[in-house]
Image (cartoon, rainbow, N blue to C red; front, top):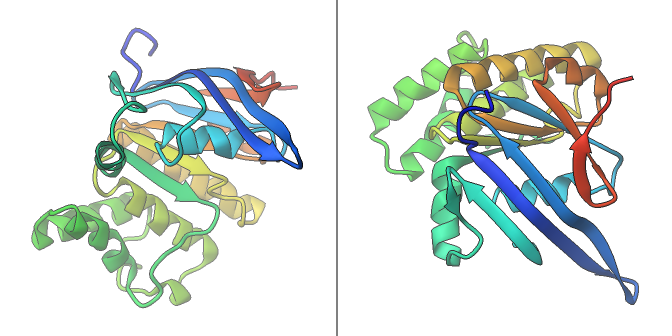
Length: 231
């Protein structure tokens, strides 16, 4: 896998925040590469910097120093509009809460981002149906979120995140609100989708039992990224 070029590369990332009259240094030179079709787990206690890393990797916030390369393109020195364009085109995000539009069906929730990106309606609908089928929701496409279980709603949010064909999928505790059995089944579906769509996935989780699904697992320690050693 490492013989190929990484889709996501983070280099020497530094991020600090003011905190009670002092400066809190969260990232102190973090580095990571994620390759196509690879799922990398990101573990660590709350406050260790997992979300900070994801936000920087997804071009949602600028670090104090360092570089983020997406498909070989240095991204942090670009203008706000250019970073927004890359994020919309190349990055999909999944959060702990599904953030679905409650007035729309599962199918419509996956169609809408594609329409916003300019895809014709028929193509968007066909792609939404395909992704929902991959996620095991072929029989639930016309259900609104209020008619879906927690696991089904997260499956829809994952399909939505992939709908515009991103090269990178970033997940911030995407199964954190689910019971263990549902979390495991949703995570397996997520892994299948990562493999099928050949995206580079970086997934933060507190649930160490999910690391069995990962290709690699890393953690943030003292502001840098190191391999996580399974006990």
